[in-house]
Structure formats: structure tokens, C-alpha cells
Length: 81
Image 1 (tube, rainbow, N blue to C red):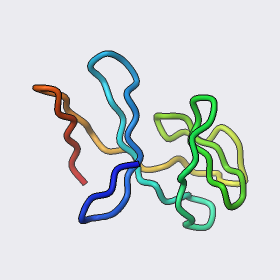
Image 2 (image 1 turned 135 degrees about the vertical axis):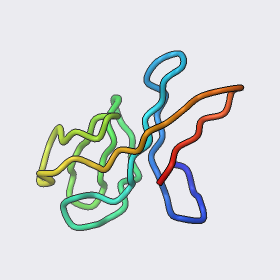
Image 3 (image 1 turned 120 degrees about the horizontal axis):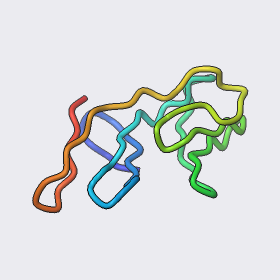
């Protein structure tokens, strides 16, 4: 979980030089996704699970989390909202 002045985002390192950045707002009922277990993001309110790319792995959510383009240079991850 990364806190910015624009909100909270889920950032995961998916390979040596690759990261994903996702909205932390669950697509089911707009609760904050703040859990991570077994390589999955988990909404602790109703149990929806998402992959590190934002895809729904288990409902009740039916839509993916919004993903943002990332870049990685000089040991800094950047993404644009």
C-alpha cells in the first residue's frame, strides 16, 4: 500500500524490473483493499480477491481493479494517475 496526496494505491513488484500499480478501491462496494495473502490482494470487507495485475480471482467483485502504467529507473518506481 502506497499513500500519496491523491489516495492509496497497491504497488507490487512482479519481476526484477517490473511493477504494477492499482487502485486500492474494491470494485464491489468501494471499500479499501488492504490485505495481501498468498500473492493476492484481499478486500477484508466482503472477501473479494485480486491478482497483482488487478484481475478478479474471487468475488463478489466482478470488475478488475484499475491499473496504472509504471516505470522503474534508478531504483525508483513511478506511476501516473
